[in-house]
Length: 119
Figure 1 (cartoon, helix red, strand yellow):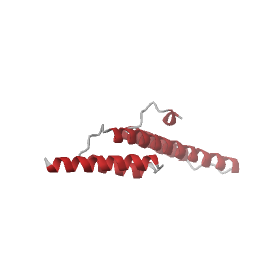
Figure 2 (figure 1 turned 30 degrees about the horizontal axis):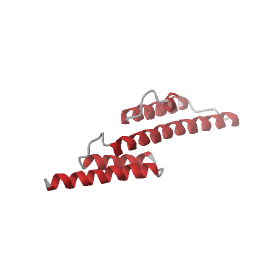
Figure 3 (figure 1 turned 120 degrees about the vertical axis):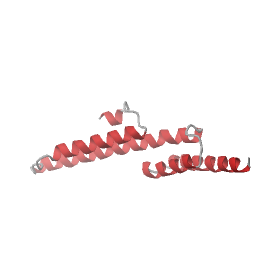
Figure 4 (figure 1 turned 120 degrees about the horizontal axis):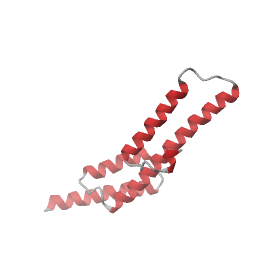
């Protein structure tokens, strides 16, 4: 039917757009929005373009989680080097934030065994 084929064309276009933007290096949040739009058009989640895009999206998310954790660690180290004692509970709060980001990344599709999430 005409509407079905139009939806399929639109879905494929959005899936391709997501993959293209992923290959251009866009960040996780922008790619996730494109991915969700593609799914909203009715394209199959296992569409080859989306499968490739999902891998890139998960890589970007894992990289972001690792970078933010390393940034927090560097900030703590600099404070320690300056002799600035951390506020009570600060390390626990930072650890909780990192843990929440790891859980969110896993919930979004990053494999729990991803080495970037294990650091």
